[in-house]
Image (cartoon, rainbow, N blue to C red; front, top):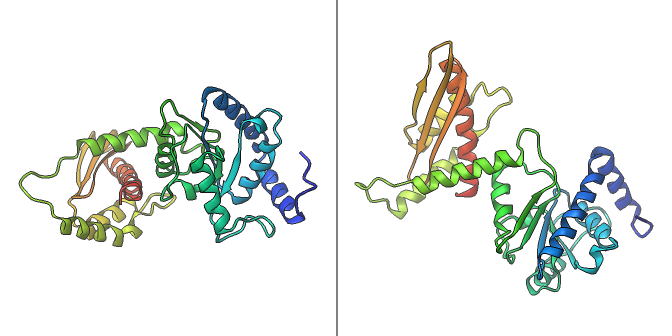
Length: 292
């Protein structure tokens, strides 16, 4: 596509993006194909495309608006934080952002291209098609983005995956968290008050610095024990297997706010406990992000 209408700083940002990510041209084609299919499937198409970079909202708007087929069916608006421009010459004001939301609410626009600002906290109508142009970094984004596709027979499409966190892994995490939430039953012998919930929430928020997992995971067990001590939670664990053979460690963290169960495997009890502690730290962090 011709970029003659773009400023030099915008073109530089675009060229830099493509030089770092050679797979983007393939994803452009896949995005166009996915949108063509979806606009034909829904009589009243309403879609959201999530991207990581602000400049990409403008790039996709430009490319899709000139698409020979899609330009007939889609009416695009961009949305990201007005506090920081995409480039020196590409930005949206707060008023333009509000107008994009208004247009999407009214149906004047039927495709919203946005950053993760629209994953939560903003009143956006339910979409029947949600597409992630870039990879999803964690289960919180997966759950929140998927939650935007609330209409009947909605589609949720991921065009790029992280090798360490593919969509199937994130979906499994979501299912596990939902199952744990559904099975949680507070102790019947004690009445949990609003003050109890607030106190525990404050303890967990104050101890979040111990949820960090280092690249080697050597401090995972120590950090988990400190976190549990600070939050006044007794961590239960059970290890199956011998000291040198393949072992499995089952851990449970249960407070008035959340119940989390994980299992870790390793060659010996020590390795299994460290693997379980690493999973538990990440699971607690994800749970606090999705359900403070």
